[in-house]
Structure formats: C-alpha cells, structure tokens
Amino acid sequence: MGLKDEYAVIFFLYFATMNTQSENIVVILHTLLYVLKKLGGTADFHKVFKILYFADQKHLVRYGSPICDDTYISMTNGPVPSTAYDILKSLRGQGLLNTQKDQFEPYFELTTNPFTVKAKVDADLDYLSASEISCIDESVAENAPLSFHELTEKSHDSAWKKGGESGEMDILDVAAAGGAKQAMLDYIEDTLENLNAQFE
Image (cartoon, rainbow, N blue to C red; front, side):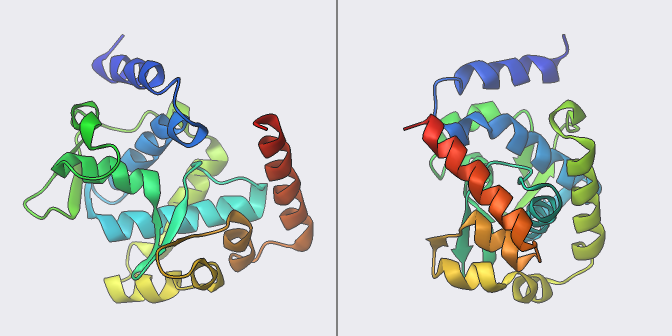
C-alpha cells in the first residue's frame, strides 16, 4: 500500500462517524486534486471553485447527481463549495476543519499567496467515475481561460441569485440554472426526498 492509499484509509476511518456531507470528504479531496492537475498543478481558490461548480452543474443536468456531495454557498464572487473551501482554509489554520490541518497537508500546500493552492500528489481516479471526469474536463476547458471577473459574472446565475448573500444554494436551483429539463428536476427531487427519508 502506497502513501496515498494509507492516507485515504485514514480519511475513511476518521470521518466514518461524521455526518453525510463530511463522509464525502475523500471524494471532494480527490476532485480538488484532479481539478488542480488539469490546471497545471496550481490555481487560485476562485478558479478551482467555479470549475467545480460548473462541473457539478453539468453532472446534475445530465445524470441527476452532483460530483461531490458538497453545499454551495452564494458568496459575493459566486458559488463556493463549503467543505472544499474548509479543506483549503485549514491549510492556514482556519475554517471548520482547521484542527485537521495535518490530515490535508500531504495533499495540498499554499503558495506565498494564501488564496492559491498547489497539489502535492495526483488524484486517485478510483474516486471519480468516467462521467464525472468528463464533466470536470469540460468545465476546465470552458472556464480555465476566463478571468476572475468573467468567472464571477458567469457564476452569478439564477441559482446564485436565489441563494441570497452568503446563503445556501438549493441543488434543484443549481440544476435548473444549468438547463435541466423538468423530468430531470423531478428525478433529482425524488432522489433527495428518498435520501432524506432514510435519515428521519
């Protein structure tokens, strides 16, 4: 077992008793690593988060599920995936996961700019499906060339507007903003209701 695999096991064991969103942390971590690799290994938080947002939106529209079970927050400069942000903020001792900083340091490091992150290892693609990789690749191709301002404006869609200032964005709104048909929106809603019923 390599070092990367050992850390993956640690994450699975550590977060096994935490809530549903945090159980997905390994997938979020490797998705971040994959996006960074596609961007040359280093990128600013803003670009990474917007690429994640549009990749999640594409996957919702086509397959009825996001790539990561993360919650997007409507921030001034566009949607921000809350858990992904906490992972990266932990590197500077901030956010809800700040006490787990040592768990993330084998994977990421900040540059001299505290809002720019560098991947230290490659993503384990076992955590990403072919459809998820395809949506991420498309999002990178479409959004990597865009400037900070252009990405901000593009991400200020109807879902972001409904989220309100620093408010949680609804997954159905994200799908609708991406052009999901009513049949797909119904499917997503039914899936969410079934999942919620399992935890009641």
